Image 1 (cartoon, rainbow, N blue to C red):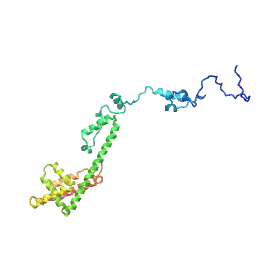
Image 2 (image 1 turned 180 degrees about the vertical axis):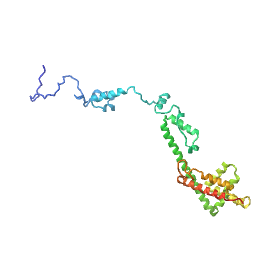
Image 3 (image 1 turned 135 degrees about the vertical axis):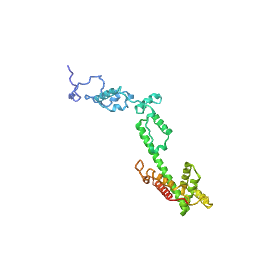
Length: 299
């Protein structure tokens, strides 16, 4: 036999709730009839040290919490990548890097040096880069990007050096032209002859010629020596410039014309006059001088 509803203080019977009243002494609940969590549920159900975990903000009812639990359970046992700690042995780091795509041995890294940069690299430099990439645990895709960046850096640096040297040459040439005036060609001829006729080793000869190109004082010094030789009849002014025969001068002119980008585009399809105009102008003048010499006969 059920108890009758207790009347309110006004004498009116209480409104029906549709649910049986909670018996006295029953525990307080934080879940409503629809399974929704009510304010205070974390404090009541979750341990204090875990309440700040963001996972408890991803659901707000019983259904959501059970779904989360099922998802976590399905992930147990699945393969994953665990980052080793500072105290981890080398074997664990090797396994970790292998999972990230690092090859089994450092020699498997593909790091080809472009043909146009071959003179800028040596085997020791490439080996050091390969060792560094290996120690960092990189994969081939990352190495490809870093190596491409390195090649571009070297190209930009070499281009800047070439342009700097070409500008130095032009400045030196202009300084000599200003100093020598109309005697420029004659005195340059004398300076070059002093080198050509007194240095037999081709590499040494080229090295001194490079100095003249960038140092007007050296060129002036050699020209003065040549002028004194002429005064004492040690040399005559009718000998070919550079101490060359016409055929040799023509050969040198042809060599200049084979410079990549001079007459024909280089391997990148570029012309030297577009990418390094000062160097192109220098080579063009040098070639024209050789062609002029090719038509000069010894006296």
